[in-house]
Every structure is written in structure tokens, then in C-alpha cells.
Image 1 (spheres, rainbow, N blue to C red):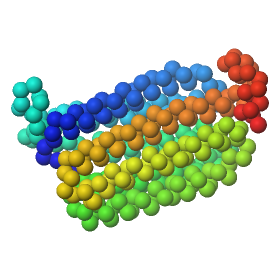
Image 2 (cartoon, one colour):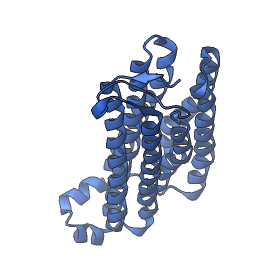
Image 3 (cartoon, rainbow, N blue to C red):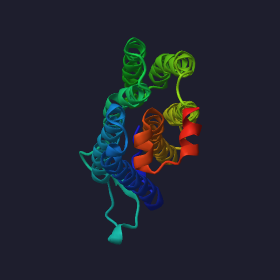
Length: 274
């Protein structure tokens, strides 16, 4: 639930976090678009998908930012007083869920695509990961917008089921397909999976704050918005840069000419191809 009022410091905290999120997502997208030519063509699709994910997130953070500024206003001179909800305005939390509904399936898809797995295995993984991710987001939204703790608990638990299934696929099923990947790729994929586990773990923590801190009010809401924003930056920007790293490593391992063109030394090529 959105609080009725925010202190000046609370308003500034959310304002600055949203602004920082826009900058991080937007310029990561620009970098990935500019850098995709530095990997072999077979891996560019994954890098492009990473850029699209960050671009989608930047767009939705623009919308969240505008919604936030319209929802809270102050009549104090110089804008230094308490911020209250403007008449007829409300903060639109749905923008986050629309963003996640689009970007989470893409995040999982780009990881599978950049590994260049056998077509049958790739399709098998995607046919399970994409529906599970959409179901996870779809089940979380009714609880997010509900002021009833029972409803929030029920949908929170329901959305946890596909979340756990996604982790099973990533940590068990995907592991079986990594034997033929370069060592550097295996270690980076391991890092990506733990990054997803850590950042996605922030979302349920932020989700349950209103349940276990019902009297915290505006402070709990600010923490929730901050948690969502920081998790989004890590799960999209940092994740996208790691996908780019995997694409670079695999390009180096696949074609010596690429390594020479990119200035990768012989000992480095041997290490990544081991």
C-alpha cells in the first residue's frame, strides 16, 4: 500500500534511487548496443537481448519516476516540507510488474542463448523457464496491490512455487549442459545463477515488508522501493554485463582470429578454452 505522506528525506531517497536506476539501465543498454559488434555473430543475439532488457527497464523507470512525482506533492516553500498524496493521484506499482513480466523471461532466455547449446536442449530449457517466470510475476501482482494480508500471503506463496522451479532448472538442469563450456564460462554462469538468487531474493523480502512491519508505514514503503530498485540494477545491468563477458569468452575460444583481432594473448586463449 502507498503511504499517505512522506518526509522530505524519504521523498528524496526514493527520488534519487529512481533517478539512479534510470541512468544505470539506460546507459548499460547503450553500452551493450555499442559493444555487440565485439563478439561473434552467433552470440550477438544474447547481448542484444541484454540491451533490450535494460532498455525496457529504463522506459518503465521513467514511468515510475513520473508516477512518483505526480503522486506526492508539497505546498512548503522550496519543497522542504512533508509530501502528501496529491488529490486524484496515486503511485502506480503496476509499472514494475509490467517491466518484470517482459524482462524476466528475456533474462532467462539470454542466458540459455549465449551458451549456444544444442537446439533440442535449448528449446527444452526455454519451454520450461519462460512460462514459469511469467507465472511467477503474474501470481505476485494480486498480492502486491492487495491491502489484505491473507491475500498477500496466499499469492506470495503461490508465486514462490515457480520461483523455486526456476532455481531448480538453473542449478540442476542447466549444470548438466555446462561440461563442454570453457572454464571461464562455467565460472561466470555460476556467478550469474548466484546473482539471480541473491537479487531475486530481495524481491520477496521487499514484498513481505508490509506484512511484518505494518506500523512502519512510509519507512517500510521507502525500503521496499529501494530494495526493488537496487535489485533491478543488479539483476539487469550487472547481469547483462556478465552475459557480454560470456559472449566474449566464447568468441575467443571459438575463433583464434577473433582473439588476435581483439588483442587477447595466447595464454589467455588457452585458459578460457581449457
